[in-house]
Length: 309
Ligand code: BDR
Ligand code: CA
Image (cartoon, rainbow, N blue to C red; front, side):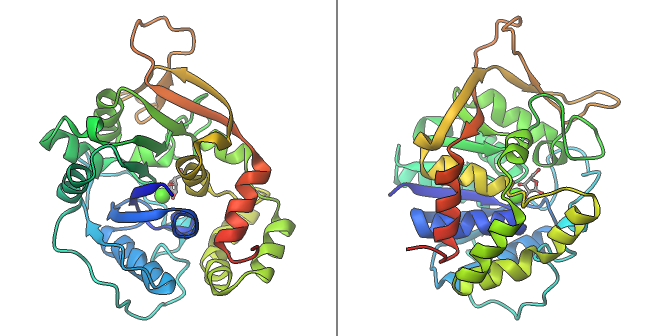
């Protein structure tokens, strides 16, 4: 079983990704970022999930703001004001560690060198901070999988080509993209190609156990938002990245290219610039995931919801 260190801002699709991690891997820890909603909510939501799963995985709170500039938007309009569909879950029991996220990332990777897969499902603030404290971090992780970017400029934020996780904290993404010699990049556009059919997903929710019940409630607001925009299918960005983290063999098509983050730009701050034709002479560090085995991805999600096996 892979051992995962998950940096996350739950968040509806983060929740599904964590359910998958619990079903198919060992969770070494959850480091929490601000992003979809504020840090107080994302920390609380992580603890709500651990209660649901009966998991004792440690939770570490991270940075409440981006590294340099204030964020221009959050994603409460998709995920609900509390990030979990505004259900009003009772105060969770799972404890919050006193250690801060960046320090925990460094400590855990020192304790288990070469063993942990880092799964980044949020703005990259905590990872960037950890890298500034200790640039040798990349040598100690087995793999890094990042959910972020929009490799041909079809983003999902107010800045047209920027995807949310990168656009929220471009400087942090820049630090991470420059520091890791190799990582898997699951971008927003791959996510759209791997959305789940609505009726099929409803079938899984109906057939699943209390995890399905929980996720069905949490995802309802996001589904309404998407339906109003005529977006069909259940989009689960972080779940796709988690599938790649759990089982690298699920990737059926990838391109390895140099990817940089635009830090300026009147219309393009936060864009991921892919050197498709290798003109810049930079090392190609990003394994861009273009396609996965969708049937296997679906099976992983179904099992995580208790709807199979
Ligand atoms: C990413 O942004 C967040 O809203 C999601 O949780 C995902 O990590 C998609 O752009
Ligand atoms: Ca996320």
